[in-house]
Image 1: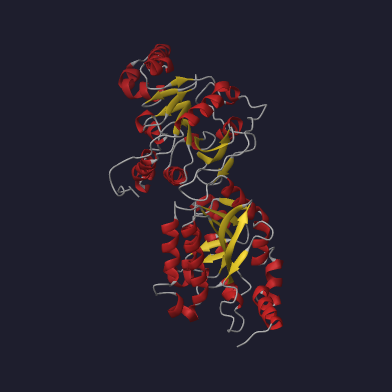
Image 2 (image 1 turned 45 degrees about the vertical axis):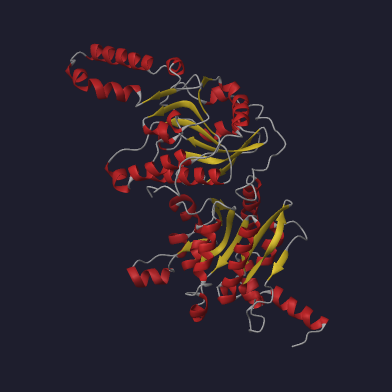
Length: 510
């Protein structure tokens, strides 16, 4: 078939228009943008170069086969992207859809640039399953390419609608996932399928909605009110990361810490009194630079990116405002993944410790707290980026290990004057050692005096000056000096050797 200019233009217009008007209207009623509008909002104006526009052009009602793919720049930096078009058979996958997605991931990997997934898809077209599902270039190849690219290039997903069945693994293999509340969902089986297989009556929102995944399952990382918010998360996330694993994170103009931040005042004298580690982080890093990740899940641990004097750092901090800052199964997993992310992309790690240790008890033992804790400690051990441990208030038990304590080759262990490092807190220790003797003292006043004396003796034993004199900690720093100290120490560690072990890979306690 020979095309003149007018015919070609008509073909382009049909491909770019997406599905029927009624599907556009239905999406608009839900507050959803057209896939091409999402792309235009995300990337630099005029930078998008599309591939595969004419996929399935000979078929009726399958413009671009339901997915937009190509290259563009975001804030002047090159990316590859895909965007499901939910006006075309609900964004479902056909054979050419799959091939387009595979090709764009392969391009991102081969050129060493981030891969952005704008997902809104009902999953595979069952009618096309032989063409798209089982073969060497079938849907499985998408996930194979994602796994190969993981840790080599940043992969970020914004989820605007469903990500169903096997398609749910696209966001699962990404570094982070931003989900639009009320519209985004992830699930392996629909509510109808769940009822048929298990008898459970549920809804897509209750089973796999944005709130569920961002606050309960941990598969989602950012709960967004609008699509514009989700796209802003993509843009901001990429601003902290290099294009690929061989480059350094992008620097920014140096900023000061917030003028009104008084780090000393934020930490209560009593370790029984909680404080919000998020406020502490915001007072420590460059003003406005803290970008928290997974803020709604496993809140006893705070993670995210920030900048110190313009340079990117990854922050891991215990938050005593939630569950006393004790480490649970989910918070161990949260830390593990974030530490691996930072180590993959050359982001130095800052650990802010205020940890009583890992949770104990039959419930967490049945959940595998030992295995999950071991996984976190494995990630800390294997991380070869510059890493600094700051004991803000306490580091007890295996919590010290999980927060990159002295035995895990941090580039420095810094103690604030409020710091305590011990197997356990004074009260627990005295009770563990002297429980029988305490119980044998009948007089209440005498018993209280005995406990107070033993607590004071224990506190002297773990005094921060003694820890410094024994070279357990490298420095004792006043809170107002901490930021400048960190800037200098991270700068000095920038050229460190990053070899860890003679091996192909370890056997992770998954």
